[in-house]
Length: 264
Image 1: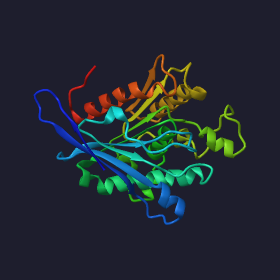
Image 2 (image 1 turned 120 degrees about the vertical axis):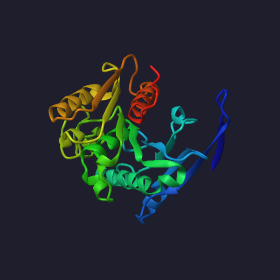
Image 3 (image 1 turned 45 degrees about the vertical axis):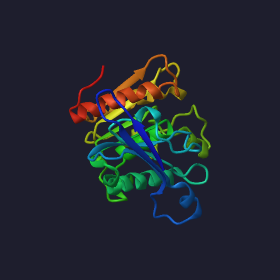
Image 4 (image 1 turned 30 degrees about the vertical axis):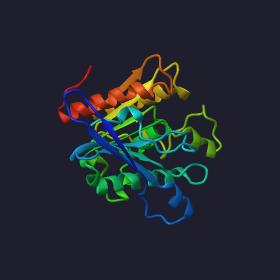
């Protein structure tokens, strides 16, 4: 557990606490007990705060939970989530883990000052793919008694909209051969989900045409009648470089939804 302080001119110091390695699962196998944990970073005294649930990247086969530095020191509760990884488990088991983590947040985040009515689900790359799938295929969160539409906003950073390339690799399909099956966000396009903020890097610098996939997803969402799909391309920034400026876009949309001032 970490206790940190932040200070702004004319305001008293705000203390923040980070609680690490909280188990969120009811699964009992050794790998789940080792892996299915989350960290929570939150202001100590505040209540009713918006919450960002952040899924790490790593191609679904590597990576670890993190609290993004850009989200620290703010009036936010931030949750960094671990999930099991390919090839030890299937993509469906990974999505089940992610849904279980979000359901845990809905049930427990008020204990850490968060408002379960103000949850944002986000992540980068593989984490962006996960957040897209939880948004569009309602069955994952529904397994844990949560309506995917009760999430306030989904904000995937450089998420894969077709079937994830490492899922295709396990199917014997090369990374540049595009497929869309039930493991693809595009398969689940619907017009009645919460706001979906698609954030990508420069289309010429992104991984495997990632911007173009998101552009097609945005078009299909709008054709399906969704009024709150937003697509951003961060010029001059590649797959990793787009993360930092992407947080400004996430915060802008969050503040707009909360009726707070927006920094240009």
